[in-house]
Length: 50
Image (cartoon, rainbow, N blue to C red; front, side, top):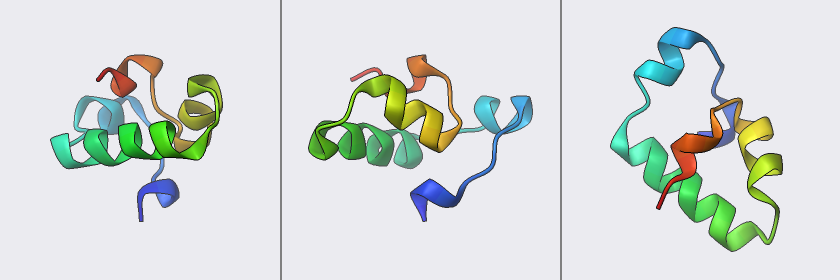
């Protein structure tokens, strides 16, 4: 599941397009700020570019 991922520099470099789409969808549908979603997913804010 999307929210159960870990974080590392390797992970950030290997984020799949599917993960990015799911992360953006989570952000857009959750009503939360981007900073909250990226903190929960342990990803860089730039991962949530549309």
